[in-house]
Image (cartoon, rainbow, N blue to C red):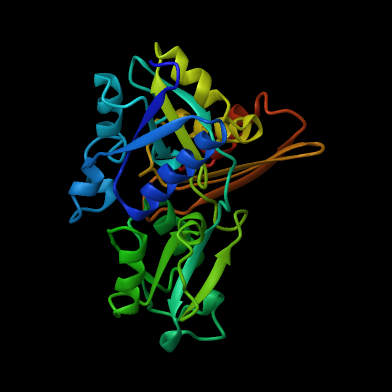
Length: 303
């Protein structure tokens, strides 16, 4: 790489992915490191007619980016960390993570069908759009009187489908809405508390992935790394790995550091439609936190 390197950043082409890539560019500019974007389509972008749990394998929003890294087409790939598989392909490493944005999910309801006497103003029988098994499981566990239906597309597309009447409500990550500065004032918005409606592991965090042998790029990206966020996301993603799951697994995991240690909340459904097992633990150290949570969750799985 030249003395004044230009970092090639691999990214998906959605508005949110480009926001993430431009955010990374701005962070690199603070280090006086110039960069350029390489837009890459992934399987998850190309196949829009299937729900996420119907797509084969893991990493359907990341594999093509990882392939481009391994070929040397780009120096770094920026991912929404919740989409990143817990096992890296040989030759790639996680070089850094961002600070976490708001990790919560929001439920957006069309005002014309909203009711005041139900949680989140969501009426009985409402059709809620989400393709996430985690969100479906927790929603139906808390509100068995509503139905879910798959919805695909980027964040603005999903919101427009809601406005067009295709759904009564949808569930989205708060980070996506706020990062894109989308106006949702025409909708009823309820923030779902992460202890009640547990987010995906590493939700709200960006992950920067590099080639293992590209030490120069890794040294640069390490300057963007947030260690405190990394500690908590490691706990969340290690639990996900213990269940051998990808982002389609009905598992929510949220770890928060505080002065006395760590609070760890998880929600797991062995299968879609089965009761959700919810646990909350507090330990003074993150050592043993994953094992204790895994054992607590699996102990309640029906035989």
